[in-house]
Length: 289
Ligand code: SAM
Image 1 (tube, rainbow, N blue to C red):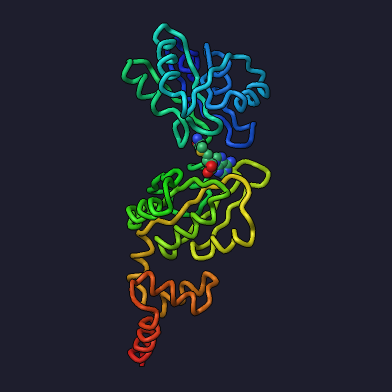
Image 2: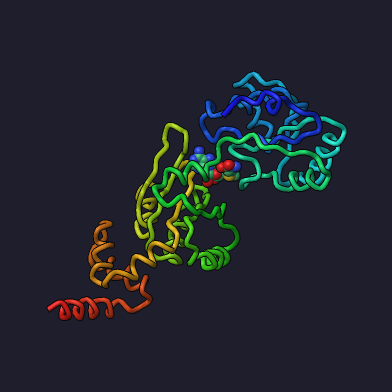
């Protein structure tokens, strides 16, 4: 690894996608600081928000706003300025631009106009949450915010129910409980890490099971910013397929569930009635003798 002084110099006519902190101001990289200081202008999702970052770092670069509602007209203006050789840093309120934030349209417009685009990487809540989850990081899918009506959200989840990758969702605190309940209703029992307030004083990771997560937040109302990291379908289906019914029930009891709840969860996983679980456990016992 080396400091590439050439790459760190601001080039005219270039769009820089600059990641900013997701809570802890100290998480701005040295390169991000340099680029934000030296570009001709900063395009910010919310200029008042970004002003706090600029004040903290004594950056005086002029800003324009670029957000969901002005992205067409403002995007064209930004491309025009880039075309005549100005440099621009795009930032969102927090984290990496274009990740559940404005940016992808501007990147596409620059690619179409053959304007160079480069990334100044840094914070991204999804990636930090994944690494803290204790779940598989080998393959994962970022789902962002679930959107639409409850029915549309359910349909969306049904399309990814058998996805074997670890799944990452963003969620607002006032929708957290409904989303956790919906995840359980569609996915059945799985491990989940609920990652709260990354990089801030109240950072916390709740490692639990989908059946218990909604209940936990009904007793402890959610406050702050959350990322949900949900175990993919693969390991469970494979593991459970190799388990006897009794072992499967014991697995859930080991997560703290009552025998009744464990049997319900097993019935759901195996797609059979709960009464059948009890019967099969007795049959397995008979076979053992
Ligand atoms: N562009 C950002 C990124 O790179 O992570 C994401 C912006 S999105 C509009 C905001 C959502 O990201 C929040 O609702 C929350 O789900 C997640 N998020 C952002 N900061 C967070 C933090 N400090 N702790 C936990 N989640 C966070």
